[in-house]
Length: 391
Image 1 (cartoon, rainbow, N blue to C red):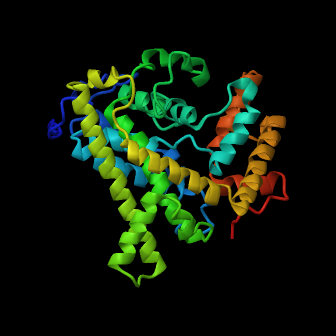
Image 2: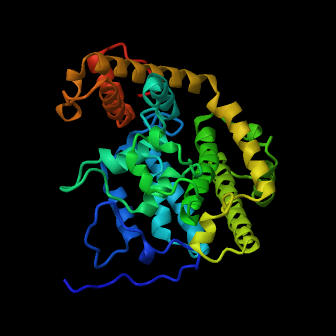
Image 3: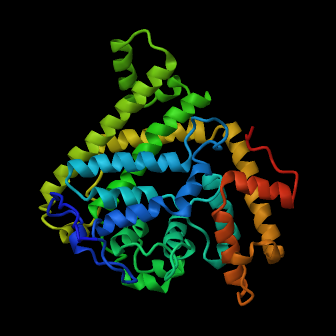
């Protein structure tokens, strides 16, 4: 077809410019119609790991109710928030959204409980971390292309994933188990697009866990009034609409909280960019800390909200009981597969593996399971499967 280049977007001078991308580890022909970061986003959306997020736990087991969030819906919401911020700041929206969509690829079945169990089991062999696992998925474990494993994403995407919680430092190589980390910058700040994706994850968590917590009945509005920011929004809603059904009050709270947080991040980030004299993407990388952040007042309110959510929601007895049962499922599945690797699918076995590689392969297989597949496999191979809230 005729070579039709994507229309250039007006980007800020400190944005991550797709026209200046460092490229990919394995060279590929350029697309006639998409930028490198558009291709990254599209590869993520079409990956198996992305589809599996549909049936992976956020806070509540995904089939506890049709309206509770899964890892997939959470990731979509993070992408929407991140894209909105990037658009205002004139950054690359495609890279921002791609990072947001892929940030939870490495999560195990049953959320952080599964991660905790696998980390303990693998302690002598490098442990387990869902951010590291996301990197393994996009560089090794996806099997879609004829000429390479993984998705062969751009260097900018890989560095953004590795720096989701900030620059990991040069000593991160052994933890990732990837000698090829040597071609990534592990010590400088991530680009603004990656920083936005990371903070948007917190914004989505805070606001939408309120929604799910209230819907479940575990969390109450009285609990949330311990947070001044939330209490103020609830007073606003009550003044404007004194008689309002609970579901509408909840949605008003969530959308206003989202707006407050997003606008705060934009204002604080613009101020930090100006005060630091940021003129290029290299200036962003050279900063001692992130430029994308909450204002001090919002950061304090957000920390308070997290403490309230932990006390009243994440540490609820029923939630903890579900987590305990889910952890047992993951631990017992690992023990069965480790004891008899022949139970693994043929594509997940290699007779040349030493013990460490065999256990890591078992860990990769279990980490990729959805909640419901893990429960089915436990019932098939072990029995006595715990009730973790499935109907």
